[in-house]
Length: 334
Image 1: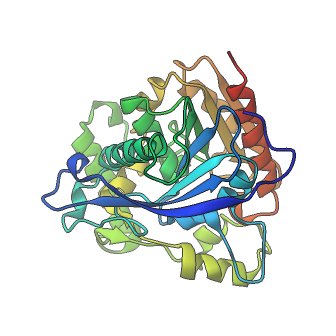
Image 2: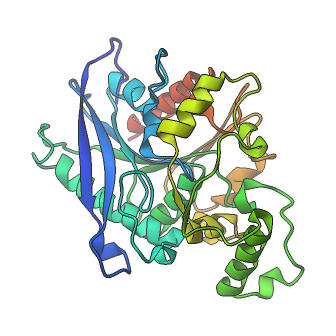
């Protein structure tokens, strides 16, 4: 792939992809997405399949706050010749929220994302999406925060992607926080016992059982630390009103369970691009590459003047350009 010297126009398409066969519930399920397709494609096109963070809809990748411009990662990539699929996770955004939401563990969400990816891939490699059928594209899976946990599991279990991009997620530290307080006998506990402990801790912190699908207020002090100090109030209000969604509690418990995704990360053999803000939730980003010992190509980028929610911040284009350069270099490898 060669990045475009001149920006290209693009078209958009809403996606509704059936994932019923991948979900252990007795009702139809779908995953929703938004597809951004450049009008001009390089000889070997790149497709990015992007999963958002917890309590974020796919619109995190297509931010369009009133009175502002240049906040949409999906449009930025499409203008530079990259096909971008911004996806909702199952149970959030415009995707299905099954009545039995406690079946939606993180691996189930990853399996649903895999089924959605197969639908996307089949559509792009035929004429289903009204684009010329793609021949020999490069597929890159992108996961941000909670979506990074899904992406690690999806790539480990299904090897859907030629490369994996992870923003702001650590398989090493529970809920991205080093020093997470875990009992001394943690390694002896079963997966169910670990989930139960994390669920009990969440209940204690919240002052009651979390709803099956729950959100997070953007006005809480803990959440505000994800923006840079001085972030305009109208931008935070836009996040709360237009971008926020709900998160299945069992998948959230999995993300907060120390070591849950690490065995999956150990099995990822594709090239991996890791990116963190220099003020991110992960306190030691330089330790993160060791989570991917099976990959022969791990790149780490630490973005200056950036907290967790980098797409809301002025430094976002530093991350986007670094990602595009990495994808370009990857496409030029033999």
